[in-house]
Image (tube, rainbow, N blue to C red; front, side, top):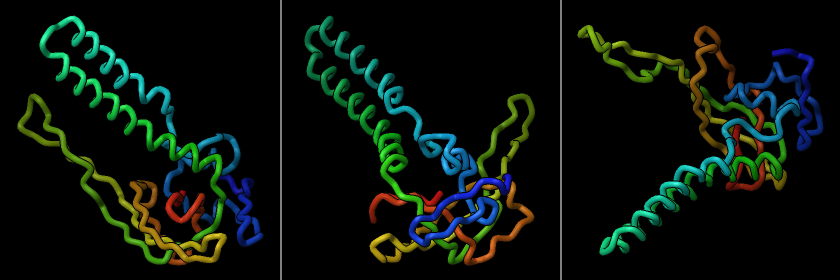
Length: 186
């Protein structure tokens, strides 16, 4: 990370260098420096509805052609439509947070770091399993809302670049805040 980027923290009225902040998802750096309009993981909710919408239309088409199973097909199509709506919910909320949220500063209160088993895969030819490990960083963070309320939240991330590093309690973090129920520690 370059130290030339600065982030304005409007609630405390000072500018913190990006290199002094702890960022859980490094993919959020382009958003923080103004190169991306949305936070990481926003995706396209327009594309998220395509597959469930196609499957719903396909099942309705099959139901029209078949006689006697129309009610079951309608229920299946409704299930696909609900699946599509659920797939669109998280990207929609992230876009809403990106456009209407305020950047405020919080602090790490306590942190834990440990090696985590990410899963294992059996090698097809040999009687061997290959296990993958990652470095999970977990931190309890707290921040003060613009209304003065203090909110604490535990955030976890797989960060293999932190294996030999320690994070000190009190390290500043960035919070994208919309309201007391809609925020994300970046």
